Image 1 (cartoon, rainbow, N blue to C red):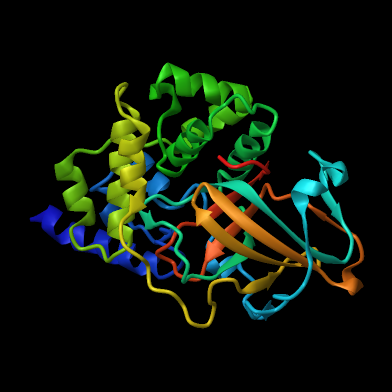
Image 2 (image 1 turned 180 degrees about the vertical axis):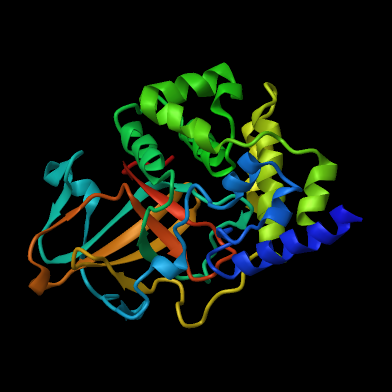
Amino acid sequence: MKRNTLLPALLCLLCFSTAQAQFGKLKDALNTGAASLLNNKQLKLLQNQPITTNFDDCNKSEILPPEFGADSIKKKLCDLKSLYSSTEGFSLKPGFYTGTFKSFCLQAGTSGPDKGNGYLYAPLAGPKEKIARTLIANWEQHPEIEQRKVQLLLWAIVAKTNFSKLSPDLQLTAATLLNKNDLSSLGSTMVDYLSGEAMSKLTANLPEPAKTIIEIENKIRGLMYQANASYDQIESLAMLGGIAPADPNFPAGVWGLHPDGYYIKYLPHSYTRTEVVIYVPQKAGAIKYLPVGDVAVPASRGCQRLGQSNFLLCTAE
């Protein structure tokens, strides 16, 4: 009987926490009663998501409508590579610019980008922000590494996967892009694969989308630990079908103000590619644009947050 009385307490706390941030962020309100259902390590890991960036982090008050600058002449960033450095990015004077960069899904268990949702800038944030940023930034120096492998490592971080149990190939990729301290710190947030019975008890009365996210992250961990699991299998878990409802207050193509004084709009082609359009006002003067560390965040919380990379696409892929 004790277990039956404690389970609702845990679930209520989980439900309360989901209202605090995108897809739920468990707070320190977990009590001793809930602790009897899960061990202390699991409870601690459930308190925070590795990457926490969400729409609450966006500047939603200083925006421009999608049609702003429609008739402007936009310089292609692919023609301005001489203005780029890997440490500072593009040096841009007042005017309009456009380019398409490779990007990454930072939240498994959500719908892919669609043409109805608007995206605004937010900084990469969360306990594993530094590692995710380093992973994406260092990839620029290793073009021989497939984008899929970097995406798998990012999903592994989000799903709190034990990197020591990944395939040798993925472990080698991680060792190439991360240093020993980064790899060591990942061990502090890992969770083992939980059985179906354990997941049922944990998620029985959780609201959506928290329930789906927790279940999918667990399934991703299970596949990550299988040597023969394919990218397509993991992608099919990370990518939900259907289209998330759009927010009419933030339509597709909306411009958001970046903290550095320029406006940017995100037009995702897929979770792997994001077209950006930049407007640098005269009052901003010259600015630096370095995509890595930026996240294109959808107004619809059911869509994927897209981590931006410095990989500019100038040829068809």
